[in-house]
Image 1 (cartoon, rainbow, N blue to C red):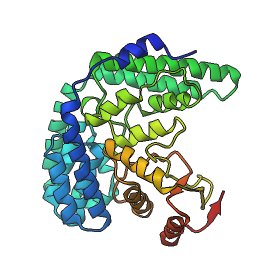
Image 2: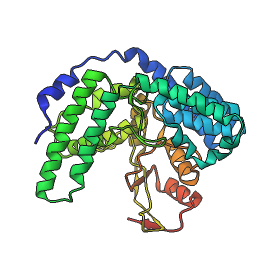
Image 3: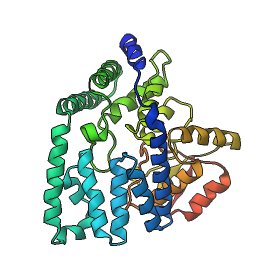
Image 4: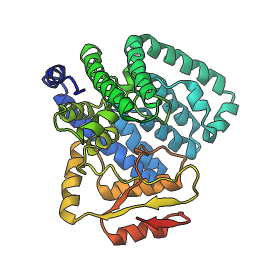
Length: 341
């Protein structure tokens, strides 16, 4: 069953007043990128200055508040750490998710912690009052339906049911966005401290299907506008977009270990300089760092779990600009065994 073209095209024609926010959003992302690079270089004080500059622009994703708090914690600036943790209440983060982070456990022993916890709960309750619970409930229902149909195994009949469900779900999500606005973190929260948007899986499956069928309406431009408005993570969008088959934003740089294995499988691909130049241009348009900076963050995230870097851990391909940079990665990695595909 094809996605309902008539409604989705009307959705595409919606005009959103986001242009004025584009420059502020790109400035926000510039500060965040600089903060993360300083963080990698262990220059925590400079990282905190960049985080402070970014949050003054009226933007703030949960992951960025969290990393700013961890930076402050790492230099024992506990008041500043608590300040940034408190901001997580405004994006729907339950305090129990924070308390599950054992890296911060010393905070829970401070005399000031009960007062902080009370303040956090008061702020979180205010967020709950403003939260569009009906909106969140309806999206959660779509996600449950998405997962339920996929839990029945795979055969031709189930695949047809999956196709129908995906079509209905995306159509329903677009109607909800038209009715309520975009489901930002501040509006509906997110799934866990380190998780993606609550509707992530719905659009992931939509863009997967677009790779196989050009008859499905293209929502890329609309969702790119949500990125530029500061409503949607650029990493999430780039991951979705590249699922369509052509590497536009270079989001496919991930490898992982299988649950029953203690080694990693890596596929290496070379990219010519002209392609890198175009990809960097594409990335800059939505506030993403250059490829070389991205690879630095990927490598850092494999070695350091203290901070949270937002990468789509769903692929097993790692791309490099040259075989030289690939061997540089391997030389500086902690992988015990490498398998070249």
